[in-house]
Amino acid sequence: MTHTILVLQNDPLSPLGVLEPVFREQGIGLDIRYPMEDADSVPENVSGFAGIVVLGGAMSALDDTAYPGISGIIALLRCGHWKNVPILGICLGGQILARAFGGVVHRDACTEVGVTRLEPTPDCEDDPLLSGIEPLAAMEMHFDRFDVPPGSVELVSSPDCPHQAFRIGSAVWGLQFHPEVTPTIVGGWIEHLDGIGGDDNRAHARRLRNDLDGRLAASMDVGRMIARRWSAMVLAGPGSDAADREIEGQIAGI
Image 1 (cartoon, rainbow, N blue to C red):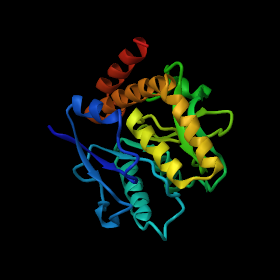
Image 2 (tube, helix red, strand yellow):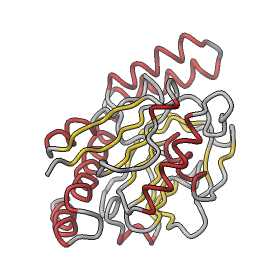
Image 3 (cartoon, helix red, strand yellow):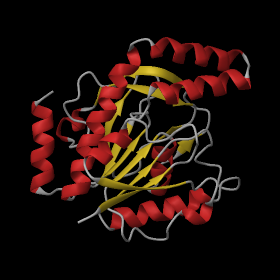
Image 4 (cartoon, rainbow, N blue to C red):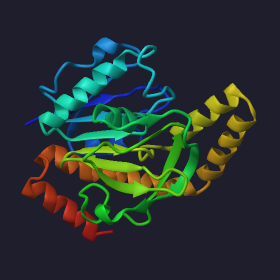
């Protein structure tokens, strides 16, 4: 049986990164589409897809007029949740996911740049995607933030931005942080910030450069772990015994 996931890449500077080789190693097919360039590329339903990944981007999750693909993503995420398809929303993707299920996105409300130590909540102890990862260090690059949707489980926080990850039901995760980053991705962000100019952007670029010298490795390790666990859910189905055994084995090996 072929397992293909839909990847919605919202920004050329924010691809799958370290997640992609893990997905391919697990035999998962990738259908990558670019909804901010082509709103019509977002399917109306999840038929044929074993999972959905919504990646980050420089635009705001509130920019519906400039980016009509956002409304299509919201509709698709609701459909995916109803069908119990595993979903992973990252940064902008997590903010759009929060919007889809009643969470509020706040523009320019929380600036976080660079690798950050994140703190799991008590509810994270039993979470199949994020439990047991220690240290939970991950790259941040955002200025907007989300409130977790009503009825969701809050999983991770940080000192500067308390809402970092949530789960809806058993198969849907929204992340504020970036588990997918690689040196190439971060290098692209640095070049972009330097090109924009301004004191704040140059300061953000310096912080990112500093994290390339060692700290990024920890974030990439977290990203690979998340990719392996999420892959297990895609391949075995959310909540299945096979997925649970795979995840328990990974936790035991930490």
